[in-house]
Image 1 (tube, rainbow, N blue to C red):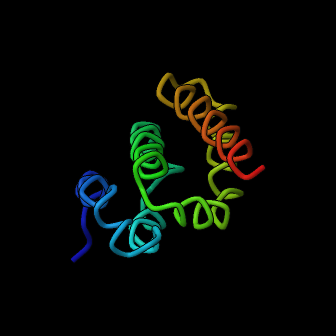
Image 2 (cartoon, rainbow, N blue to C red):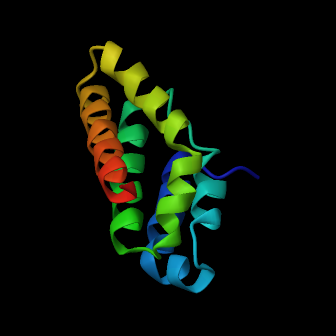
Length: 108
């Protein structure tokens, strides 16, 4: 039985900082995030960016390393929604740019 996207996001929200500190990374978060329909729903994409931001902010320092593995996929989603004229899509595109800039800064 597959979970709907909203249920997966709720599971990802519960993951936030406690689980990343216990697991010392974001493997579980990314295993859920890979199955999300980010390219088909602008609202799910925006919510994903919001949850990702919280995981990066409150999570274990290794979360940054896990993020770099998926950075190109996230930028592709931002580019996709940036070219479409959907309001949540535009928000998701700007949020992806913010997250990418923030991660580039923290890697230096």
